[in-house]
Length: 204
Image 1 (cartoon, one colour):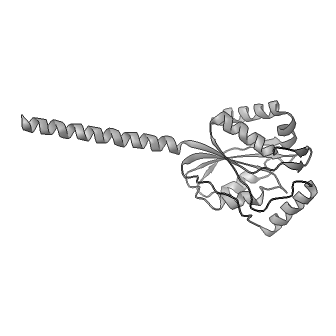
Image 2 (cartoon, rainbow, N blue to C red):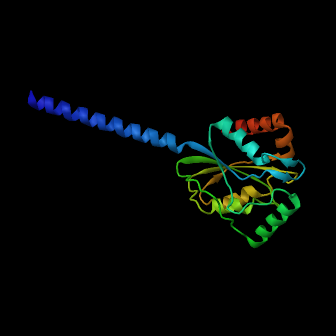
Image 3 (tube, one colour):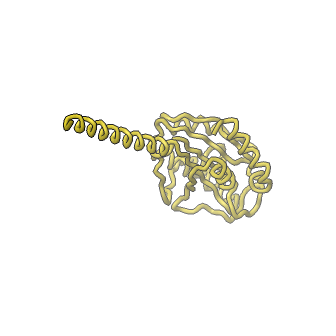
């Protein structure tokens, strides 16, 4: 009888251990399936929309986060860009691009817990702002799904999907979304429909 009870107790302990391990594995799996929206965006004097309080890309980023339930993180540089003059801003952006600068960021974000990461940016001189590269090059993208989105005034994604593939080694880069900045700023109903349709098609 004692031997039987000992065996029964051992089986119970093993079953309890297996259940605990399954729970941990399930929680880890759920954590790794989380999504994150990372974006760079500026308010102030912007092309085709004038003085704005919220950046065009920020508006789209928040729509995506609201729709997907993803966490949200804004990239901000240590050195502030000029927001009172669009012409000055684009000259700063061009200078950084020519120098292949990597502007320092105020804060970083641990991406290890996320499987899907949306990356948003305005198109500056046919590319992502250099601050976005600062973030991309600081992380391990192996096994991640990267989903780009941008705001622009006629250039679309401007080849940034392929640049993301180069910068995010080991990641799968999904088909991106391009929304005109003026649309995001002045016609949010249309912008939101574009976001919803894109997410539906991509199965996100």
